[in-house]
Structure formats: structure tokens, C-alpha cells
Image 1 (cartoon, one colour):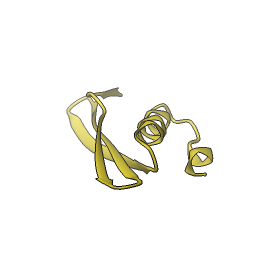
Image 2 (cartoon, one colour):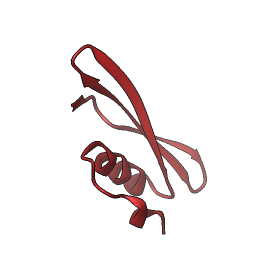
Image 3 (tube, one colour):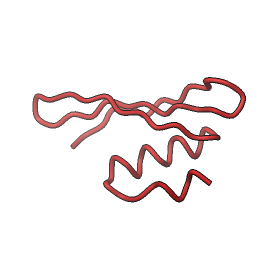
Image 4 (cartoon, rainbow, N blue to C red):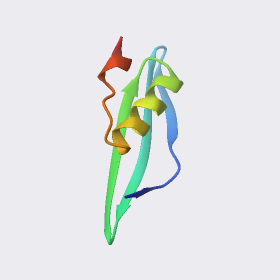
Length: 59
């Protein structure tokens, strides 16, 4: 699976959403992850793309 650039939006004071688009052949899928900082949201999304656990970052 290939992904486009990861973008992060600040929703409110402590809520950030990281988004990207994944491509697998002709299929396209958008995914997003929420985090309490920009770095946590971005890292959770990258771990999800890589198929690794990310729940430990929620704390």
C-alpha cells in the first residue's frame, strides 16, 4: 500500500486529526487518526498504515 502525504489539522485546543489517502492498485481509501498533539496524531496514523499497534499513544 502506498500513501500520500500525511496532513494534520487542529480541531480544537487538544485535538488534532492526521489524514492521508492510501492507494492499493486502483483502490483509494482515506484514513484518519485523532491525537492530543500533532505528533501523536501523525505517529498513530503512521503506525496504523504500517500495521503496528498504536493504542499505547492514547495515554
